[in-house]
Length: 218
Image (cartoon, rainbow, N blue to C red):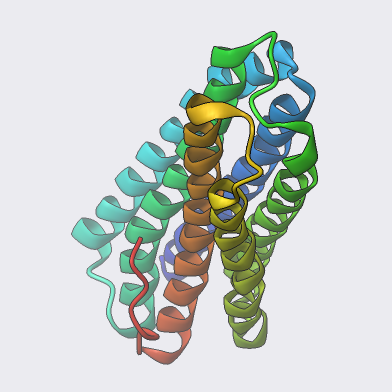
C-alpha cells in the first residue's frame, strides 16, 4: 500500500514536470511565431493550449484524491499542496505563451514587433524557455541550488522587460501607439511567465525545507 502511495506522489510530480516541458515548448514556438510572423506556428500553440489545461485539471484531481484518501502529513502533505498551487502556476505559463501566439495571429501577416527590437524578444523567449525547463528539472530533482538559480536567471528577464520601457519612451520611437501597446503587453507576458517559473521553484523549496521563500507577486 505504501509503495502504491509513493508511486502516486511520484506520478503527481512527474506530471507537473511534464507540464513545465510542455509550456517551455509552447513558449519556444510562440516566440518563433512572433518573430517570424508564422501563422501556422501560432495556430499550433493556440490549439494545443487545451492540453495543458487538461493536465492541470488531472493533476488537481489527483492531488485532491490523495488528500482525501491518504491524509498525507509532513513532506508528503507539502508535496500535494505544492502540486495544487504549482499546477496553477504552470498552467498560467501556458496561457501567457498562448497570449504571445494570439498576438502573432492577430497582426498576421504583419509583424507584431519592429525589426530593431526583435533581438530583445528573441532573448526573452530564450530566457523564458530556459526558466521553464529548469523549473521542470527542479521538480524532478528537488535540488535547492538549482531552485535558487531561477531567482538569478529571472533577473535577466526583469532587465529585458525594463529595457522595453526605455525603448518605448525614447523620442526616436517611430512605430506609433498601436505598436507600442503591443510591445508593452508582450514584454509583460514574458516577464510574468518568468515569475511563474520562479514561483514553481519556490514551491519546491517549500517541499524540501518546510519554509516558503520570500513572497513573489504572481
